[in-house]
Length: 475
Image 1 (cartoon, rainbow, N blue to C red):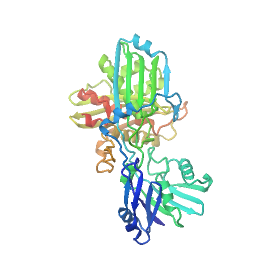
Image 2: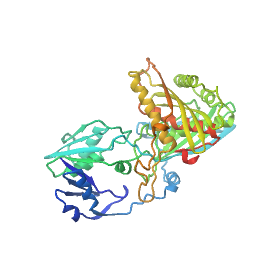
Image 3: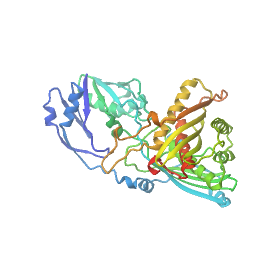
Image 4: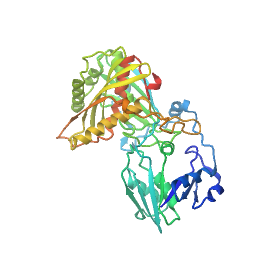
């Protein structure tokens, strides 16, 4: 088996103009492979391949990523009108009732903008693939989440019938939506093309941050009209660039308009655990909390006044009872918050207790109640819920991909903050085994309520409303 390494451009918008590989080619058993914008080497050992890549001088075109300070302004400016067709499995435009009539009938009107930043998937294991050609047949061993997608993309790239491409899937090493496409796999196949030996390519952690796609940054505009008793009469919601998952609220609102607007992105973006549901739920539930605070209505009571979903009512009630909601008052740096959502058929309520001292925030307790229909394996399900909540803590508080005009600048674990053991509070997961309902999705939906639940508790503790993710830089 040979080992491969790839010459990387500053960013995905760069084109390869020229290169000088003469020094690398003088190394024993090193072969240089060039195809379009792809440039890499194979060698007998991994360290030889890495050394050879450092000797190649490549000239790339300028691939300007723009000014990150104007990211959200540019996302809105470059957004397209909403489309009625589906985005993924979700409708991109939803309407009911009359928005203008609902707003006219509402004495209280609210409007706010919410933002979420790019974040990386940070899988436990970076991507690795082993590719081997035998005549015109290709076999790739890899840890992909989507072997049929990878097979189709590789077959198309090499103009092969799909039956001549075999994908052998090993343990994924976690993915969270990152390992869907033929990225490392296609590169390994390029390196192996023309050799009679298998070639192994292993992405570094830096590759994982900078070469993969990330969760989209997004802007969400929300406008609502509400009666004095908290009944929401009108709801207008626009998501720019993020996606359509959890676009409509799980509340009984007679007049509503919700739309997803595709836009241009400076960074490569794609699937992330729950798709756009994290951002849309953060914006919606934070807005609900703002209505409750302004009208001086308990956040739990406001939600219950607008819900006609018995399963959502049940998870909120169980969570509030277990948490002891309303028995202790927020203040003096201690805050209690909550959020709920329905996504992919999973009904979730999450309540959070935290302590805040300036920018120092310590989560102390979380209680989650989850109804995903019939529970087949409660241990695995509880672990999915808890793991999703922990992952959501990172995106809520501190995870953020930073970039300048040419490259991602914090693409290493020494510079990119992920949740640590010290960040994780006591988490109690309560499952409702709803045997009369088919089992629903549970790997993604539990992450959606983490950020707004934390934001609700932060407001209760500090009096400061934060409308962006991550939240800690705004404290």
